[in-house]
Structures are given as structure tokens and as C-alpha cells.
Length: 392
Ligand SMILES: Cc1ncc(COP(=O)(O)O)c(C=O)c1O
Image (tube, rainbow, N blue to C red; front, top):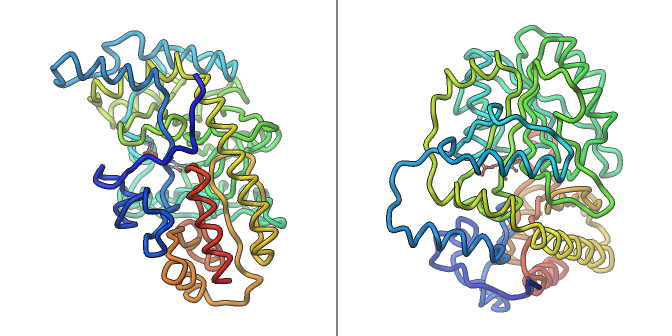
């Protein structure tokens, strides 16, 4: 079926984090007093029809008791088939561990494979919540191997990465692949180099690939497990949440091929219950929703192209590079010569557009940046861009 992603669906009163923060109504988006939110990585676009039918089926059963995914063989099979079909990756059933969200999966790895006070490496600018995982959830230390910004195209600092990996207390590298917020889809060569350096220094590589299916048409994502046959220090975290806009169902999967790693992880992590809704959802989206995903990717890429063209014409001082993957724009306001507070005030207070301050993802270097998630109906995006243009 053909989806109409221009349709504006009301989210007020539906507990949406994004729209609660905006304090109002999507349908009022043209009202200048209505704040427009782009800070959270979920979509304001309708979910796939087969998914909606699958969820109805769960509802109609009239019982929603304790549930675990491993009791349903189609759950693992759907993941196996999805990865084989889309990425030519062969996953074995026993490698799969269901988690209540990717963050829980990442936290499990940190707890299982490091000690309080150990260093956990990340490459900022990177998804700000990793910092909370490391510092607040598990009491480890953030070790930042800062990316190099080549005119908006971010790359690893290889020398620094190798140096940091060689420190024995730096136990884990959390790779964001594709990278939120900088939009990189790491190349085969980059991934192989990361794997080799981690292996050489006995660092556990945790690859968070929750953004892997939202990708520009000229790009290909490579799951980390397709880049090597030596799985002895690699964990893949994946989810249906970003791809199919099901973050509210909290359904993620941790894939651990190595039996020894998996044993340690499971001991730390225990058997996680999930909901019948997550199980039904995953089976549906991984089997029946390719068509929706194709259309949503096209629509999102259209939004990205539209936003970049608009910014180029009306806000040429904002530097932005087209992301290779994700639905996230990483906007650089440094040409305006303003303080981070002035940038924030113009956007959030005067334009009434809610983005996310760059410091969330890069506390030291992010002051001139704002993150904008654009998987929304185009009229709302257009209104927000018009407001931004007026205040700069
Ligand atoms: C890189 C990355 N990992 C994890 C998450 C959170 O995922 P989940 O809702 O599955 O915990 C996000 C959400 O934006 C993300 O961008």
C-alpha cells in the first residue's frame, strides 16, 4: 500500500516525550505559539499497516501476562531471516538475547565485562545517553576518543584510538554504527580497522546499530558481524525501535555469537521478560513491512534533502552535511559568532523550535551545534525551518 507521510497525526495526550515537552498539539503547528519539537529520535509518521494489525491481534487475545521472547520460535527466526535477507549475515538462534531497549543491552555489556571505575571508550560527538550509561548507570569512566571533523564529515582519530585502546583499564569501546548524531555510516575499511585495533588490545567492541535501517539510498550499512569471522570480542546491539518507530514498545536484541562472552553476559543480565506486544511487533515488522520501510526511507531522505536545500538558501551560515544514515541533522552554527546560550535562546525561545543542544552529545566541543531529528510530516519541518530562518 502507499503511505501518506504528509498526514499530520495528533500526538497530544498520547504520552509522547517529544510532544509533551512541546506542550501542545501537532495539528496546531502553524500557530506561532506552538513549540515544534525535533529533539527526540522518534517519528511523527504512521507505522506500517501489518504492524498495526499484528498489535490488534495481541489486543484481541484479551490476556497480557508475563511473556518471554524465547518461547516463540518465530521471534528469533524473524531476526535471523531479516539479517540474512537484508545484510547477508547468518545469525544463529542461540546468539540472540532479547532486551528491554538497546540501552539496557549496552548497560548489560558494560556491567558484565568491566568493573566500577574502568574506562569505557566512546567517540564523541556521540549519542549523549552513552555518557549516562557509563557514568550514572554503571559508575564507569567515559574515555572520549573524539572524532575528527573534516568539514562536517567525521572520521576516527586512529592514533588516539590505538593509544586509548592500549590502556589496560579501558575495557570496552561502544561504537555507534551508523553514528548518531554525525550521520556517518562506517565503511568496511573503517570497521575492519576498529575491529583489528580492539582485538589487538583485548578491548570488547560493542556495536550499537539501532539506526542501521534508516539509510540514504547511496549507502550501505555493514553489520559489525559481517566484517570478521572472529567474534571473540564483539557484541552487536540492534532494535526495531528506530527502524519501525516502535520505541514505545521497548524491543531490542543483543547478538553475542561467542559462547563464552554470551555465558558471562547472560549470567549478569538474567532472563528478561518482555511484552506480548513487542514479540508480536517484531515478528510483524521483520517479515511483512519491507514495503513501508522502503517508502519511509524515501520520505525521510526527501525531508533531509529539503531541509539541507532550505538551509543553504535561507540560512547559509548554518553548516550541515547530508547524513549517510539516520534521520538526524547535525547543524553547525559557528559562523554566526554567537555564544551557545544565544544560539539556544534564538532557537528555543524566539523561534519556539525545540532541537537538542550539541553539548548533550559532545560536552566540550558541541556548544555551536544543534541536533535536529527530521522524521516528521514535511509541512511541520517546513514551518520549523521558516521560523529558524527568521531568527538568524
Ligand atoms: C545510538 C542509539 N542507541 C540507543 C538508543 C536508544 O534505544 P532504545 O530506545 O532501544 O533503548 C538511541 C536512541 O536515540 C540511539 O540513538
